[in-house]
Image 1 (tube, rainbow, N blue to C red):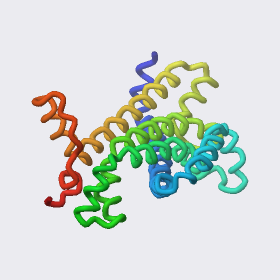
Image 2: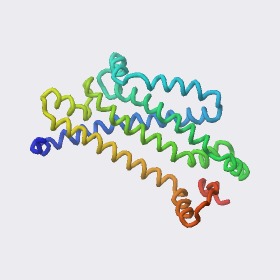
Image 3: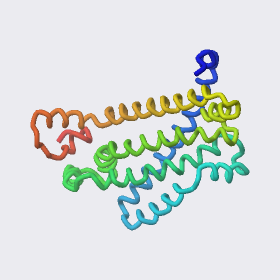
Image 4: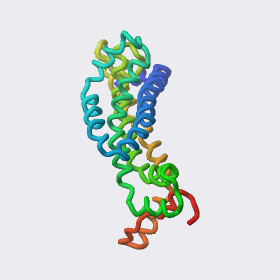
Length: 234
């Protein structure tokens, strides 16, 4: 390990880490924006889910590097060539989580929300989606970490990422670059994952209260009150 090289290349390390973060985070967020409405539709019309899931599984099986190559004539050697395939992969990961999260909302909770005068749209926004948030964020964590890892392949088509350290290290037979690239990918993935865990905690405050109550009263299996999730007074 050449520590002198590490100390003199902090600038490129920061630059490539930020570039890799962009290529990894943007596709996951785009996948989330697409998967939420699509997942709502699949949860609402159950017949729609099997063909959509089969299609997403087929897309997920496509090699990322092959998709990069196919897109180059249309999107050039830019970030879009990497972001589009990774968005598709993120969508494939997130869609089942969105559907499972929405289907996991207890029917008594839905009925209670309807009894409180919630319209279907308001019930979806204030009750069902918040309750599905932990499952959706679990999928988002997988999507972000996977995209950060796959984004490094963009260097093979000339898109700046941490993959530059792998390519240069192999070409120059210089293991330090490869090790630095691996460490930076892992650190970036861990930081993003911790931020998503924090986001889940902040977006689901009622879960903290329920865990505290359950530690004090073992065996409490009551459902979360609708008013506690939606913020509407009962």
